Image 1 (cartoon, one colour):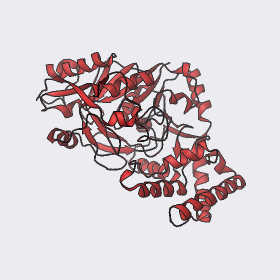
Image 2 (image 1 turned 60 degrees about the horizontal axis):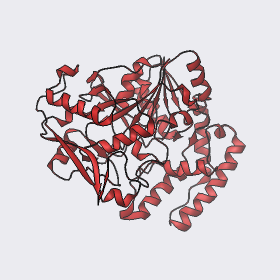
Image 3 (image 1 turned 135 degrees about the horizontal axis):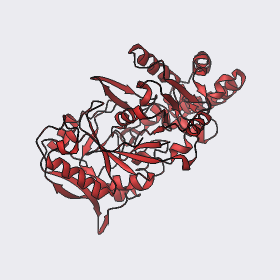
Image 4 (image 1 turned 30 degrees about the horizontal axis):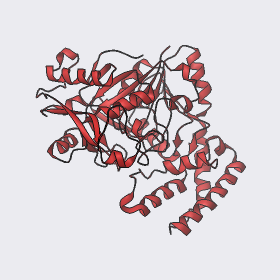
Length: 430
C-alpha cells in the first residue's frame, strides 16, 4: 500500500494536473482535499487539452475511484458542467466512480456575488482572486453558517439555513456594497433542483478512503494551488482561502497522518505567479516575456497572464519543510531551451539580512528583498524526445542536478513537454 500526496512548491500552476494524471495510472483512488473551482489542472492526452477545475485529474483513467473531499468547497453548477463536458468528450470512463463528501461545503450564488463586490471595491489594491466565491464560502464554514452537501437533502433544514444566510448577505450586498440583493426564492428552487443529481455522488468519503486503505489499495491525494498560497504559510494576504500544504490532505479527506507514505512536490523549472503579491525573482524584460510566451503561461481558470521569473529555491526549500516533501518533480524544463545563461535564486537580501531557508513573513521585508542569484549555462537542443536523463544535454542535466543539491532531495520525474508521456520517469512513487 502506498498513499502519496502531490502538492505544488510555488504559487500554483506548477503542472500538478499532468503529474496526478501520470501517477493515477498506478493508483486505485484519487482524492482532492482542498479548494474549489479556483483550481485549474490542464491535461494534454493524445494531443487534446482538457482543463479540470473540480474533478480530480484521475477521472480520465479506467477503473479508478475519484473523491472530492470534505476540505473542498463545491459549486454544483460548475460540477455538473464539468461532468457533462467530460461525458460528451468520452473522457469519463463508465468503470470509474466519483464521490463527493457529505461534509463538503457548497458555494452559493451569494458567495460569488460577495467575492466580486469586494474585489471591485478594493480597486488597485485588489488581491487578484478568481471571483469564484471560494473565500466567502470558507468564511461561512469557519463562521459555522455554511451549507454542507448533506444539508441540501433535508428540505426544511436547507430552507432555514438559506433564509438566514440570504438575509445576512443581502444586507451586506445592498447596504455596504450598493449591489442588488440575491433572490432567495430563486436560489432555493435552483439548489432544490440540484439535489437529486448531487445525491448520486454524495457519500461518506472518509469511510470510503479508509476502507480502501485497509484493503491495501493505493491512494493519490491531489492538491490544488501551491504551497505559497496557503492561508497560514503563504504570502498573506495574497493567498487562497484554504490550506494547500500536505498536512491538509489528512484533514481535508478524513484520514490519519500515519497513513501517508510520501509527499511529491511539483516544481516548475522557473517561477510563475497569477494575481497580486510579492515575487522576488519576477522578470520584466525580454527573458520574462519569453518564458511567458514559450511556456504558454496563462491561468487555466482565469485566463490571465502569469507573471514569470527565475526559479526561486528559497520558495522551494520552504515548501519542502512545510509539507515534508520527500521527492521533487520538475516540470517545463523544455521551456528553458535557448536561454543562456540561466539563473537560480539561492537567497534573498534585504538590508543587512540574508534569507536562504525561509520566506520572510513580513510583507514589507519580502517586497524589498533582492534575489541572490547563481548562474548556470543553458542549452539549445530540443528536449521533447528525451525519455531518460542521458537523453538530456549535459547543461540540462546539470541544471536538474543543481536543483537536487540546493533542495536537498531527489528529482524523480522531469517533464519535457505538455503531453501525458512527455516525461522522464526516474522513480515511481506508487
